[in-house]
Length: 327
Image (spheres, rainbow, N blue to C red):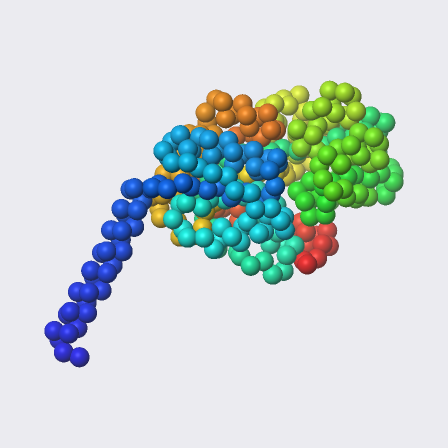
């Protein structure tokens, strides 16, 4: 190849790179020019759906484009996660992820996506502490008394959950490991069924979400003992943490955040992160999140990336310790 031909090819390559970068910059500056969708991997009515709808309203106002919520339920969220992982990384498809997303890699052997590789962390939105409760017939007024009781009656008491591998199940299994107790697991089809089972005495204890707890607590049908998070919940300040109650280092909460397809342009990622932070810090959204039993908590993309990695590793270790096998 002649020198002039090589120079021409180098020029063409340079022009192509320049055009690509300039197009990317222009796209980021003009974003968004059409509606944005937030995908939820569960049916309407749950916490993830509620968060998505609150965010959609705020982002519609700040972005100047309609932000829609799309529910793609099934496979514990995996159908939606896979769909978003394969979507164009242009900022027009976002995804609400939660604690279950960080459990699936340890329970599903052949997921069609990789949570950490294929999705870009945008921001945390909220942490959801659960509450360890007992039926009123259980003679324990705090977590220390409950641990002593269960140790004196190994294998005799039971706890309910919304299913094997769910965050409440792993919360209870972590409790068992750290407290060195033997409690029988009774899975139910959903949160409402589990809460009813605990309130009726079918099981002695459970880790309940705050929305499930509050009406039962008001009616004296369950006795809350402690929260699962590292810090006390702002909306349940009277309840100690399990860490305070003798299980030093105990910390397992549900959580939700926003992700997007990997490769999202940095300018769009930064803008979305900033706008989500402003939305979540708004007084009316804080109030709405608290009503769902959620502590507002946003983050940088870098922090959320590390957070997801640590959650995946924590769950993999816990699932291995309790002997659950990947399907």
